[in-house]
Image (cartoon, rainbow, N blue to C red; front, side, top):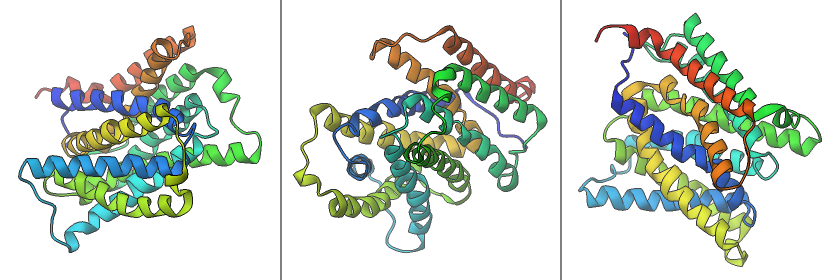
Length: 300
């Protein structure tokens, strides 16, 4: 049976769009004066602290050491430590526009994985056509100038592959979260980020020696926001949406996030989107409508 989408699912999706759509800009600000491992460690460490404080304030507790932590450990590696580092490292070279195009591979990979692993998440021709329409919209939104950046010198190619690798990690995380993460959503989120911080913080301390760094105020503020918003709060919303609506629906965030990036460029960075950007957004929305049309048209 197909998973039904509720107004709550759409609200969660839009909240994730706002937070994750802004993270590309904040990543670029952060890496301007901080190395990638320090950015990732700060982001994950802050998020873990925030969530642990929240669950304790609510009277919840993390599970005792044992098998219950195995799903947290797997998601921490695949969904936090590895993709956060790959994307942050890649964005030292890759522009936000091109990163957005590469990240759009995530929903395409997700629907293929979900087709084989998740009941009710079948890859129909209609859904495939909708996702293809949305992906074309992203390409159009970013424009030929961004696509012209594909290729080039070895460092640039490797950086692009790093961002793409992060997108593929997120796709696998979406499916695995639905399959293996059980119990309280907030406890799962806190446990996952705690394990991730145990992995990345020692690496950052060893490689970057962050106590010797002199980051700009904007970079430091960007790391704090990345930890609180797009990581701590967004992780809770992510687990809620995966459990409620499934990984393929959640992956639609990657079609809407480029629109957030365009608006931030217009309002904050003083950029002027081209006509292609608005047409691209229209195609993205059309692609989402196609993938959801059959479910929406069915009686409740």
